Image (cartoon, rainbow, N blue to C red):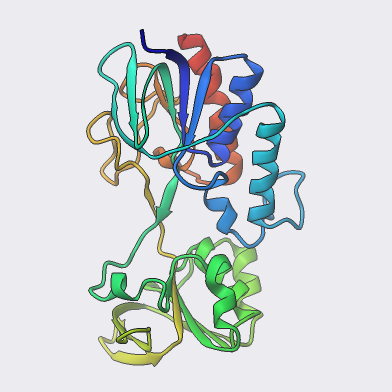
Length: 302
């Protein structure tokens, strides 16, 4: 007879790691699956300033601390990609690239990935001047000219970070004011080598083997200009990592997983935690909270 776990956690970002710590402490028989590198999107964050008790730490350092904490408790992370799931029965089925697993409860904590602009040449020039992670790739553009696309906290943080490396940084935003918190905006406007391009969108990436320039359209004046850049960092929001779910749980119109106040999805015994679910605030602190709550409720379900 196939082994049936009490719990399977899918995704090793802050929510999943926290869930694994709570599951270990609760002595649950669980499996923890991550398709790539444990730590989640925070590993791509230059500096974390809003997590209580943590100061002057990079996202990568905080991610490592979380992973180490879990491993010190004896948590094992299985590196494999979940390809499909079946939540129709009391015993749920999780099929990965390597195995098929069975479990009584599931916590989905797969997070979200950077949203693309969807322009024709974007895929061809990805990694050849187009990036979605300033912390990962910023060093490649030392003393060069770059652009950041977006107006939220990630875009503003990326622009400030890149201003310390690049010769010139353009921040392109489709509106006439930023959505980022005021403290981040203050840092931005103090930098002499950052130029704002307001009310504008990127319409085209230009270049054969490498990015050479971008076409930018002012939405108000309809004026189009060509801007020479060595690199572009796209920071226009996130997309939930849910490709393996198909129609297994209910989603909102934007594709985020709908949960109740106890983080249970439309499938009984299946919970969602962290950035992958429909929620007001996607931050490390809320993801950690979600992970703890999800395990606590899963225990009661069991």
